[in-house]
Image (tube, rainbow, N blue to C red):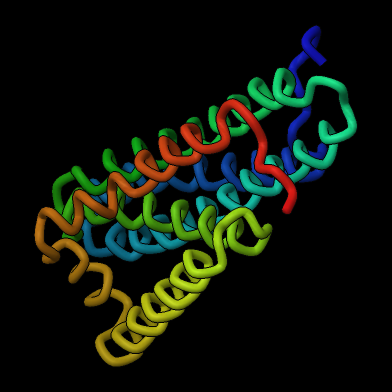
Length: 214
């Protein structure tokens, strides 16, 4: 396992996520000149890019936790699981950080271009929040969170999605996304830092040893 890169994800998962990431990258590359030449047309494309990026980030979050659960199952029967768990956990974290960083950079560049109506920080904040909520819900589903904390995660996510859906139906998608930029700066910063903070917490809690079965 040390002589080659660990395959923490099944092959079909890697191919699917990489294909989706590549498609989104091509779409972003095509969107850049359009948004510069025709801001009104580009605005629609930017919102679609943001939504697709958030969905993709949620898929990466689910795959991240699935890789950790897979690692626990595979290494549990070995004599020294902790020694092999550490590089496994680190590789899973690097993969999620890499994807998050790529999409974050692309969205920031896109939203910083002239003619964009959305606040430049709103896309990054929503992207981080999507990844964080996906990871938290997946951790809760896997039983890695205490029941009270898992219940809070389910309730908070449900309430947030319901509020966004209600606001989106009443005001429309354009107004809903543009409103994100009017949120207080501390709230946007908290959303943006949600994934770095969650990844740090996970590293401190499970970075050296996998969770013990109850």
